[in-house]
Image (tube, rainbow, N blue to C red):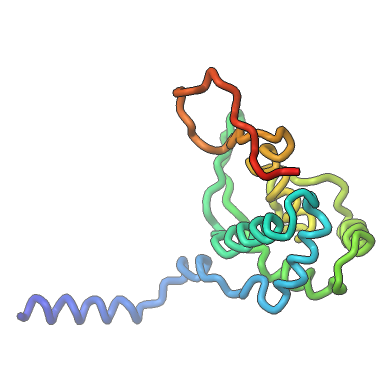
Length: 178
């Protein structure tokens, strides 16, 4: 009985101790907040029309999850030939919300082009880099497995570990695409 009381007291006391290192892990911005419709409208403009409404919504949902699960300070894999330790910068969620708020609804191609020009973005980044939500949403989709599959109209699933069984066969065709 005494051991249990001591453990309960220690657990309660540990909950009151501030841990500044954990502050970086806290999500302070509700993304996309009240701008979910704007984000979906943006996705309808910049993503392939072949995805349709359901496919575009699925990409937006995955992007929202990526933003919510973003962990600043997490180590970034240095890659082959670049032996230096790097960590992720602060979450781009707050910047994204401001950028979505600045967009008019309905989002048009001209609005997207103007936003990219204003942000001085000339190239699509290899992965979302936090400079602008337009380029980051596009990088998130176009550098992923789903875009490769749609491009080749085959279920390549390049980011999945498939093993060697059946590797001599071509990937199966995508079903349900135009």
